[in-house]
Image: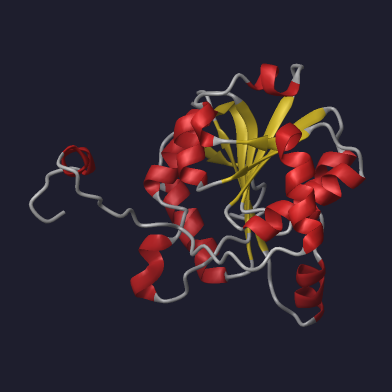
Length: 239
């Protein structure tokens, strides 16, 4: 880190040190419908990092199981899950503003009251906004696999991320990951097995069948017709 020993030391000296991100923010252009959805629904469904640590019972106005999804894309699957499980509360985290707008628009159209969203980096949301042992499941579906070996360090599934998730999950809570890249699936398994506090829930081998609660996307269905694999991985926090 050049002449500084830490990010804090650099910041104290007025020097900005960029962090490695697990994503590339592709902003894209908002459609009129997405912009209107953001304007109309952000006040009731949007969450901001500057809110600090959240009391989720206060946020949702009740006690319930809490599911957090990182990288929900355009939000169709997340909205479908929230619609099918009204007894549970969902928090989506996405950096792509058009996707956030689409998610909010569809959630509002379906009259959902059990879904909130962040438009922010997931790692920072976990660190700054969620209390320890406050969530029942964290979902990470089809994250960017960063194919090139020199980019593997950008994969979100790394030791620090896993331990952050462990801290936020309740004992017995689950980390559910899915990917259509076999090498990334193997990477996920290797990272999880190297970290304490988790147990693979697979009855046989490392992978589980797609649970009913995870919707089958059009992209995934097309891949299956072409013979492409999808790997679901679920680890339970045991300590």
